[in-house]
Length: 487
Ligand code: NAD
Image (tube, rainbow, N blue to C red; front, top):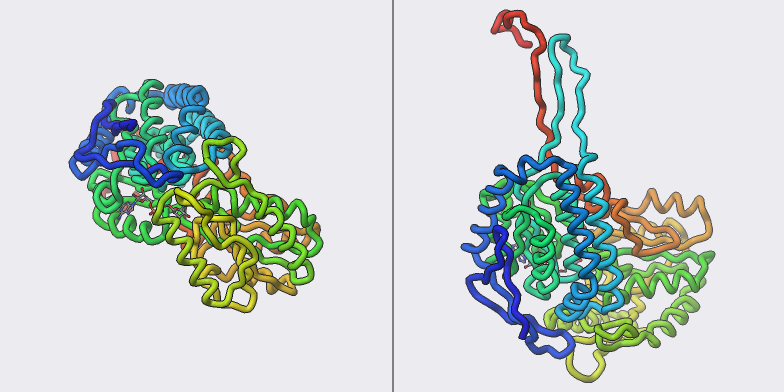
């Protein structure tokens, strides 16, 4: 079995305990992971606190920080094959996706390398002739980053990149489900030459490791990606240290198809939107809302495509759908499908697990018209699409917004004015028109409502890792006048 270590204060270290990581294709252990508990977390946060204020990190110029980020980006690109394989091994995410995603992770680090020396303060046109006043942008401080198991290298890059660009130090908690790629990534941070304590990477369980990290008194900001229930724990923990939070949570994203859309193209986008990453994607387009006049035709196209998807070993380049990452996740999907069928949803295709070992589940489509299916409200985080139909644009918009989540939405129509109306009316952080699941380092990403708050990606995210300091400088040599008159 392969063994992995935590990275604390520039050194590779075992945690207080160890646990086994499960290969989702077999359900058997394949690697041993370090389990960081409170004492390890405390060491990591203290290292980050010291590194924040000490030389060399605190005196590096922004351009020098950018150079370190460029080096890290190059190392990620050079090691992309190994990182992709580890992520696939540990989480079951198919190699086709992990390889292309990791190439993009390098681009995110490159983007934030370039941003480092473009985070500018400002000079204020103050209403007093003898004062110069500036806003300085300073790093927000020590950041706790807590990430889920899906796409850990990507979901940590959108936090680590902007936080380093802004001059923060950090403790990253890899998920206990599939931590291998992030623990391996620590070797690249080390090789890039970041000073000890700037980036610390640990793994462990939520209630022990994650809780100790998010309520630690020396943490200034918590960047969290995961489910809404865990987010509530994070926010409660932040009541201890009064740290600010950014929360990237789940979704039940609407995918709206009008009768005038290019149905073949929309179907391909819908297949990618729900079955890519085996449906374990926060932006999964998991609620299809299709115009009634084309519903049957569109479902026929989707069914034919879903039934020819290649299910198999995630390490094979030809595989299109791999296993779910954990047994817990697989049980959740099976239970929610059963509850949805009991509530009146009709099975269009799928609904079963293929025979054999591993946490596999067939691409599934549920027709939910006329039912109160719980699949319309609850995130599967699996390869299951729920379908509703509409007759008017107003009805489509109402159904799209009938969710407490608000992460992403897709709109497929050839009608430009309608696309504009929907883009404004939909309550979601991202709206894709005639495309789906596109991302870029340049474009902010995040949600409304139960999908969280804060944005990742883009310049906005780097500014979120800073706080402003107002500096007043009196330019007059005259003595300060009457001390009891407000200046
Ligand atoms: P999760 O919420 O169970 O776990 C996420 C992380 O939180 C893990 O590292 C876990 O150990 C930690 N954690 C658990 N309990 C904790 C506690 N009490 N205190 C502190 N930390 C704790 O999520 P998951 O099942 O790993 O991932 C799936 C969820 O993540 C889905 O809801 C999905 O939509 C969401 N997600 C969101 C985005 C986004 O960008 N919006 C991206 C990917 C995944």
